[in-house]
Amino acid sequence: MPRYHQIYVALRHQIVSGIYDKSGLPPELRLMEQYQVARVTVRRAIIELVREGMVYRRPGQGTFVKLDHPSRMECQPKMQGLLDNLIASAAQTSVRLLEYGLQPCPADAAAGLSLAEGQSALRILRLRSHQGKPVSLITTFLPSHISRLLMPHDLEQQPMLSLLEQGGIRIGAAEQSVSSCPADAVAAPLLDEPVGSALLSVVRVVRDVDGYPVQWLRGLYRPHCYDYRMALTRAGEATARIWLAGDITTAVR
Image (cartoon, rainbow, N blue to C red):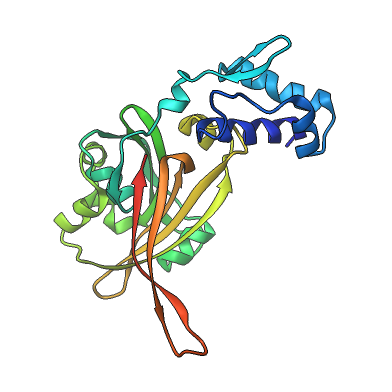
């Protein structure tokens, strides 16, 4: 990624997060020192922000944030819950089905579902929005024999796990990992984020009560829309006390 674009992504995130507000962006010289780049690189990053309408320049005064830019108004209401379970239960949420069909299962999803790589599986791609703004892009793979339980029109109306339970599958447990990844050329425009910007990445494997995997999911989330909160409790012997995690909630903001 070009250096100017990296700086643009960083500045954009800070603007959306409210770090740069009425006082405007730091002077060009300070940004040059902070990012260890030439003035032309800083100026090109700022030009991208101007083109996007996030900032405006006053000759001799500096670069200032447009406080009424739509990106600063996104995801303001807060709700409590766990990621897509939270989103699916919100009355203001809409789900748009982008893809639905049987496809060869990629290696990571196949491993999670205990399938052979390339074996046919149901692939579903959905875009979740809150108050008209995209918040997550969810890719799901399920064993092909489950496809009869999930009709396309139902996936825009009800959470997927609810449809599986209505079809007779008893959900037992799930394993989940959380990390980050850059927005690629597919996810970036759908989530209204710059290519290369950081996204929250969640991978989850859901199992039924007998331990068989019934769903593999990867969710990409806009990070400035979420706050993770975790309750920690001290435990262990006095010489080796550790923190144990309690419940985790996620605030959509």
